[in-house]
Length: 141
Image (cartoon, rainbow, N blue to C red; front, side, top):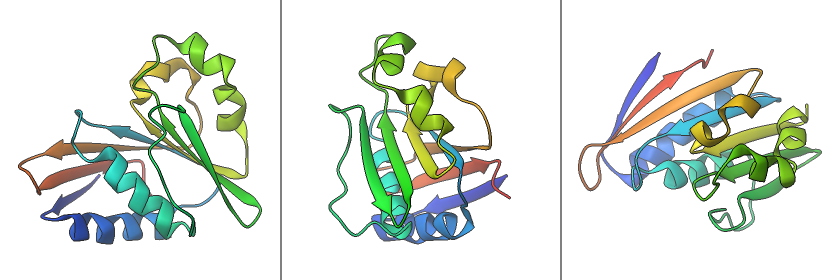
């Protein structure tokens, strides 16, 4: 397990870059944390360091945003608004998670727990104060 303490958004950026350098395709990253803990902030930095140079936005209302990097795809899911897994199935989440050429980053993964499989990294984010976050990472080799 990796433990990292971020004291600022810049520290979170640095940590996201370190994680991005260790990722390979396919991969699924599960982000756990309370509302406002920094899941989306971390994800935006991670996606940037994975090579996306376009505007990165939160998928809260879309459920998923997709980004292309060369011939690969980065799927950023925010499952917060889902009532149940059937909603995820309706928009094709299972197929996206099975894509061998994708990295999947899932906020609120507990909402679709039975759909998640494969090589998974779990990141737990705990807000300590306004700027400070604790990251615990499981499954990263």
